[in-house]
Image 1 (cartoon, rainbow, N blue to C red):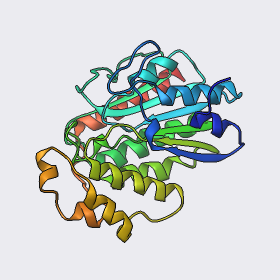
Image 2: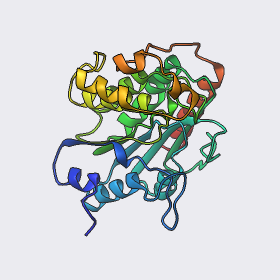
Image 3: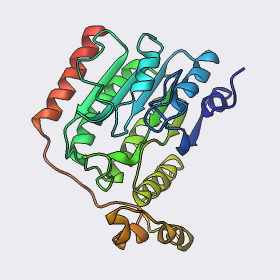
Image 4: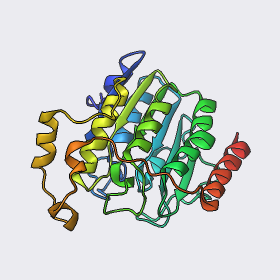
Length: 267
């Protein structure tokens, strides 16, 4: 019997939501750690769902880094469809749009300065249509906060509102939903983003000021990087980032078109 990973808890019910911010470790391999990840929690959760008899699991990875460990675990398993939005050319240097042409894996490598407009475009034109067509019985969303503009380990420029919209749009695709965290190396942007995801999952508007207690937590954080030595006041007093719209670039359109073409070809 597998231990009580979030997926095992979810598999016990015909419907429900599990939110486990610490369970987004998507790089680890069966025999070794990789990329700060000692265990691959999303893989273990999906295996628990499959063990319970669920046979259609959709995995959507919104981390700035390619979800390589999850893709590799299920690339040849037609019960699991993996979709990963990640910065092109960043470690682990996998997840090209043309990778695994016959596998149940869709990669959306995006250029630096990827913005809210482009995230919304991929959500509406690729991720949601593919998710609906797959008819998942369970959905797993990895919500790495390192795709946000303030994070030092990517060159992407999303607001946390882009991730909140994605979770809100996706969460109705399956009766069972597991949301996990992932990367994120600015403690203020991570805390604000993941608190907002909790709010979205509970039907609460996240775009509200933090409570005095939450503001106290935010003011107590420290960070050794330069930005952490002089953090802007809004990191303490707001949960929602300012929107970060931008141009819809041809590179993003091409990534979307390649993904659509692949899924049409593979059926």
